[in-house]
Length: 81
Image 1 (cartoon, rainbow, N blue to C red):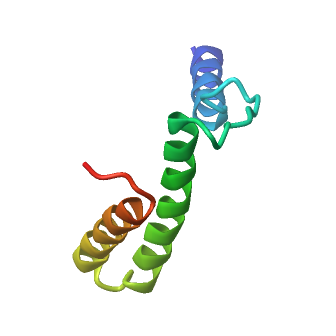
Image 2 (cartoon, rainbow, N blue to C red):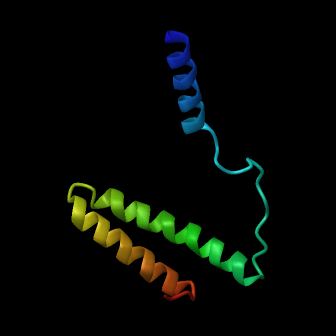
């Protein structure tokens, strides 16, 4: 029984730490619409993350500020919801 729990625990840890993607990087073509969207999301997620860190002491305010930063950044990049 202990061996079973150890095995299940090892599978759980391996599943949580494994990469969910194929692990292969692919190049995003910047001249396509999908490529521009992916690039904009990466840039804006970085800016929103910085905003979250700066406002981190104020948990809810930081979440709202980072969401607003992301939306504003996406608009700057030419994407709106």
